[in-house]
Length: 119
Image 1 (cartoon, rainbow, N blue to C red):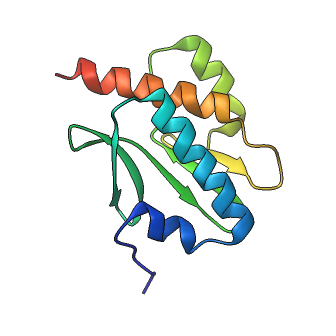
Image 2 (cartoon, rainbow, N blue to C red; image 1 turned 60 degrees about the vertical axis):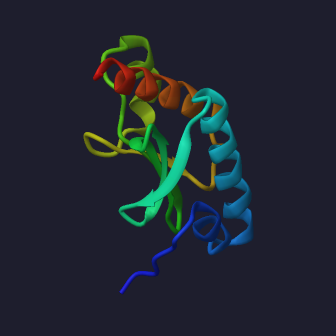
Image 3 (tube, rainbow, N blue to C red; image 1 turned 120 degrees about the vertical axis):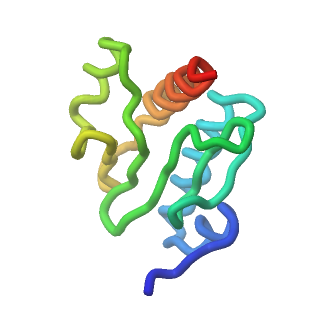
């Protein structure tokens, strides 16, 4: 059975050291893009929330990091995300390449805007 973590800190600290640094930077980047966001573990992975509702998930795997879901409705952003798409709702960033933090910030901001529009 996969390991489950109660907090985002516990999830990150369970990863290899190099991956921990990247996850901390992704976490910081998302929080900067989505001010006043909360966080929790949902589906076993770190989840950034607004008012207790998910906005964006991120996770570490052996060879890549993933960010979920993929925002919709912004054609320019969609074009930027194309090289990282893995399936309909997943962005996949190889650990062997530089992580595009500014692109992750755009994704988080767009997802937060979409979530706010739902209300």
